[in-house]
Image 1 (cartoon, rainbow, N blue to C red):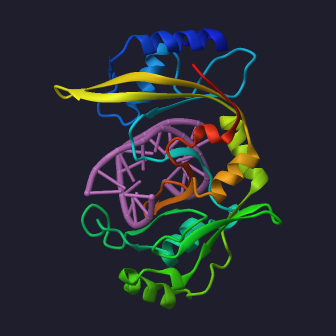
Image 2: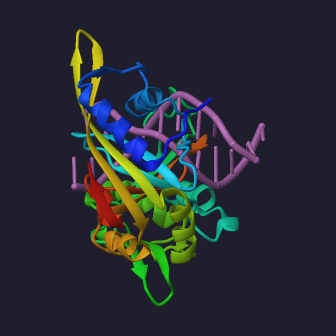
Length: 261
DNA sequence: GGTACCTGGAG
DNA sequence: TCTCCAGGTAC
């Protein structure tokens, strides 16, 4: 059972929650506690912001001081049927997982890369936005690999080649916009201060922002500015999926209309 | 049960 | 900041 809100009543309730000050984390040991606790206070279910006649509202919650990137959505790269993460990137460009032979089987491989459009990772990966093809394209440049990865680079050379990825994984602009637009078209974005006392964690929900009209143009600009990153997150036994992630404080940059309360 | 999604963080 | 990583669910 969930409570229904209008936009205005939700804003008023969020203001009241802000006025409560420090609130104990209701989901100890859960990284999502900051969001779950707010959902408990609002009396709503996870991933369900029930505002009648206002479809497509997302509640997004984040700690004020965190180095973490905000995950916008998950999407495996195209062509989807080729399953390029488990079939190409992980086996050919992956490395031995640091816990292979202990937590995981001896053969466990890892491919974790957080890549952007303005610089290469130290393993030579990057993305670029191609406006003619209307795609975000993944690229590998062996000449940009840091010498600390020489052994790994030699393995890549033996297993595949040092040339550009073939095929290059990509996401179509329009596919991305549909996926992200249907999820984040409109968003209540809440930030909270955190503190720990006597082993208990507390939240103070301080910033209330209403973000409206997600913009594809602004999304692509954020990619080109390096403020949105693509995060590969696969090991042999579990592909956690490929994420589009946002640098801290860039969320309002993606919307046409920003209102603070 | 496999795959693609979800929530994220530590050093 | 970047590198590398976690436990989950929906279908």
